[in-house]
Image 1 (tube, one colour):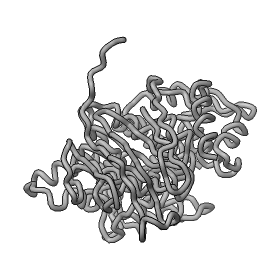
Image 2 (cartoon, rainbow over the protein chains, first blue to last red):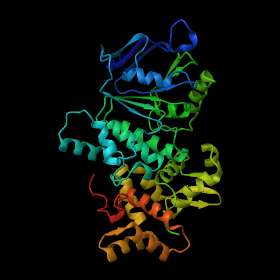
Image 3 (spheres, rainbow over the protein chains, first blue to last red):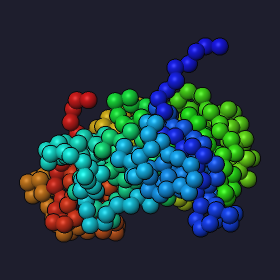
Image 4 (cartoon, chains in turn red, yellow):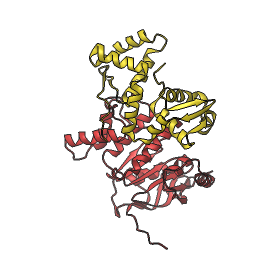
Length: 257
Length: 161
């Protein structure tokens, strides 16, 4: 067997259990015994039935909420607070309505030790990369959903995070727009000069997960445990209507339904 | 009617779906795949057709050479392609000329609305204004600041990269 170079472990969840209220009362357990390693250059999707704790997993990874049991390691170390090297993209965009596109993107640099000029340069560069050039002075109310989510993505990427977390990033968009934005996110992902080193995306859309990811984590219904990990080695760009994709989609859908 | 009346993202999304189907597919099949009604896709189809990115033939959507070229480009390249296509559309061209010639490159929203009402009496001026801003911003033809309600010609896309 050919030897494979082990890619760096970025984040590790070890035996993570998340619960609300006492652990003895089963219905309050959201996630149970989750073991997951996110490695460099991986695009991971987490899929599962609604209420299985998919989004909670992202929040635990980032340190926004603490697990009741188990540990979260970032580069082999427990950090016990919000991880600065990760940023999140939200389903509902989470933009500030009173700030324009440029200002909303700049929020992503809050608390970072950059000079005013450096800030401006980073925002300008990211706005361009993400296709928002020409929209700098627009307010969220003037933008379509697709453009709003571009702002959300630009804001997340402007700090050059090592890991990008995306919580149902395309679910609020119409199907044509989401097709387009998925494509552009993959373009960005394939550019080695751009951050991040890894992406973890939560989605309820199995086709989307199979089309985009290197690995899919399938969760069971509540309490969420890992039912299966599916590796997808198909080269990109992938044909969303190819038999291989259909086969994997069917397999995963069967596990969830 | 030479102003595209659909969001930029939906038009490019439609082209991407067409490419997945190797450049030609039945309109009804696209709707079916996306679980959309025909009515929901038609604005994107009409806009793509107006921009000559697709052809429509007996219910089939066919990706044109221009559409294929657009898809082959990155984000900046797409903006450059659309800059050329959108600015050559009759009504858009008329509006750009109006801003350039009569106002030296900057007009108020009110000015532009009156121009639209006068030149295109059959359309909803506000809505038309929004579509002009939608495509004008994306293609780097013009900039609009809703605070000052001023619309001005943009410098256009940069050549390199």
